[in-house]
Length: 288
Image (cartoon, rainbow, N blue to C red; front, side, top):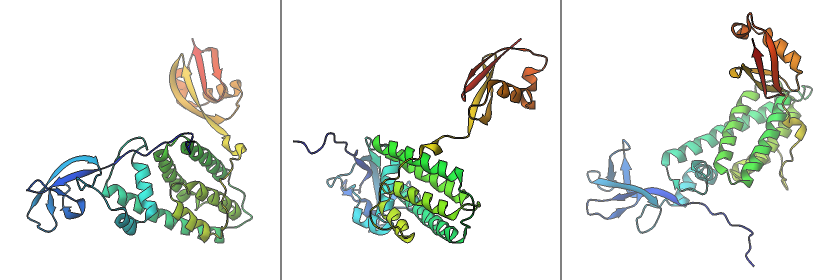
């Protein structure tokens, strides 16, 4: 029997091709450029190199990158992060040194953030209240990354990692219960493991987390946001977005709209003869 119910393979990794003046294929390691436009041979800096189209990496065209050299220079996780971020797995990947460097720098920034979070866990007061904002974000991210893993949306997961970094860098300066911060941060590191396993494992061990690591479970109560965005229409035309509490009563919502000076120009000297309310999504006021 086949070992899998289904097999999903990565697309090809592509790279520019290079030829010397004698039309011989040249490896990327033998080429350099100062401006990204003109390429020259490293052994003879006066010899210009012809740049060809980006094609699937192959030994015959010498447009391959030695993974061992790249891993030694940037680390395995930075390589994984770049490959997964560049394009969906069913498409070809265009190898880029700049993209590789960007992934490497992001991991350095995240390591600095990890050190700050660890320091904050030690300094913060355990008597502070638990952060609803943090718990909501963590559980929403567990849901997103779980779904994206199942759908092979690896480049979207990388976007989720950047979103997580931006959220945490703002959060650590707020008053927060240190036990709550530690618990949520550990769960975030666990869901990062499929993309940057060495980094996540190092951070978890640094926090004293050892042994078997299980995938975090979603606490559904934190997936419900207290506030929702409700589209306001007047006579069928969109006039704004109202931020209000979930399950707000229709009449209370209408009163809030009437008291908002932003909508005076639409409501002044007008009478509301009918309203169409789709709870937590849209309200349409019919005026005469």
